[in-house]
Image (cartoon, rainbow, N blue to C red; front, side):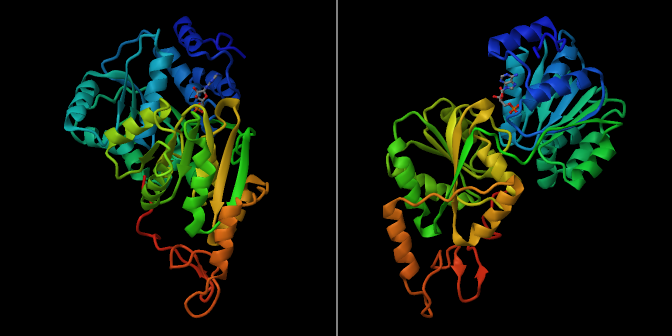
Length: 423
Ligand code: AMP
């Protein structure tokens, strides 16, 4: 179906044509008519389906050429990166439509807080915000939000996982009861259903098959102990130096992100790193450099696993198995976006094997285990034959470094509870 057939106005059609969007994606075909009918909506859809345009386009259609002394539409998102990305989408779609928008999120200077304050005081058609930053403004009393017409929650499951539920309810308390509310979520656990009952009225529901990675992703697994992971990455990625490929590596901990980046830099690859200890400006600049091709490899925590849309990522590596199967699907979903092909490699140590079986169950498919390159296999064999303290041979990560202690039969992880990334 074309966007013209969906009834969008000419200014938006011009913007979409300039962006090269020819046909609506399935979620756009289903969601846009529902939103134009002014119904509340719950949509269960992953990123990569075109969900952002599915909610932005009908709202932009309604707000084209309108001015407002208040905020017309509020889009709440879990991360700063997603706020910036949605704002960029907004700029593209509304290039020919006269609609004002603003992204507000933390981690920046006092100057940007003042700019946000000014815009929130004078009004803007659309505001994209992270909950914490918006509450900081709402607490100061000047935000003109009582005339709001549209509330959109994007990545609602992630916002609840991150503990934003009270912030969201507080924000919603400032909004008029009569409004159109749209909730987008990659998963629909019971807590989302309960939450949605509190904030939506007689919503229509759209569900797209979730928990299944895109068809175009080739998934591979290497069984390898922690001691050999960095070396394996060097072997796998070293030959890619200067090939113009875009590679994304995920790790659960901040400390590992820095270690991986350092190890890969030593092979001559250009490597950037992103986790929550970096200043927002640096995070944005690193992402820009990566998108612009000035960085070949980006190493990140799960802060980047959802929602972030970078084109042409050819390879995603999971340095460890994420604790939640949905996170795995989101991480590997960063490649093979919009019907292209991509490869996703996961490094699984002995202690993560069972966790990975859980991921396979969720996806309802087994991922073939790839043979290790000979130089790494040799190291694995050597490691396995090394005596442990107490005389046993090693079973995976020795030195108490996130391995499997044969004596206790209990997996242990030095980083547990200390250094895991909070988004
Ligand atoms: P999203 O699921 O919103 O993160 O979108 C995934 C990617 O698909 C983004 O790069 C969008 O720009 C792109 N996209 C969304 N809708 C369309 C469309 N109708 N035609 C072509 N590309 C699209």
